[in-house]
Amino acid sequence: MNNSLQDAKDALSGGEHLGALGSLSVCEMYAKKAEVDTPEEVTSLRTEANNQGMNFNLNSAREFLNKNDYAQSEIAMTLARMYAQKMGLGMPEEIYEIEKELKQRGYLKEKYSVNMESAIENARRAIDEREYLSALSSLNVVEMYADKMKISIPRKIYEMRRQANEIAVETNIRRAEYALNNENYMQADICLNLVSLYSKNAKIPMPRQAKRMMDVVRSHRLKES
Image (tube, rainbow, N blue to C red; front, side, top):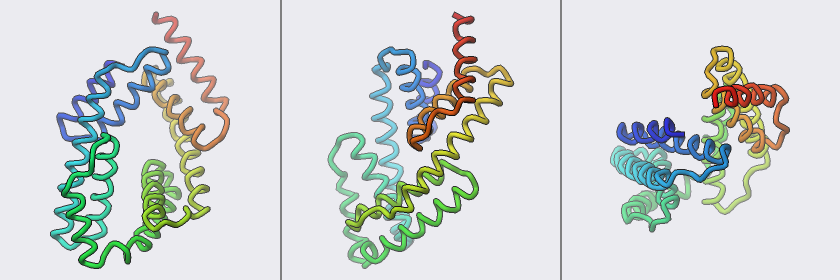
């Protein structure tokens, strides 16, 4: 757990807000598994990471707007809005300014549908290539546009999300197996926790192979204690 906290701090120092958020999630996962309170420091670090993510995407939105790349500007603006919401703060004024400029240029309403279809295609391609993180990210963008257009999420998106989560389960089982073969029990534990998470998301039972590996990790932990 302490290693994950340090990883988060290192990521923040390097301007890697996504890496920091990932490390903080791992820390919370360990705390939950150990049935202990999540370190108080996690909250402040998560706020810092979200703030860093908001500022990064605000800058990106402005840069893309200046280059007339409206699609990327709108995506970055939406991500900035998401990070601001996670911090429980009001929207930065710059978000409204960029949104106003995009509307004045006649972009937003015309492009929502096009961007959603593009995100669907990106998700489909990522699933074919078994890149589950890219697939899930693209599917989140699809749902975001559906919400903006006040339409129902296409039914095929639910099936694609299930497929992406199943790929995540299979991928992390392989990673856990590789880690165990190399006696890297900590990495195996992280991968197996991800297997549990993605199994729930896919609404499938925890694979027996993963359960057996969890027993191996648990047994090793008892020997070490």
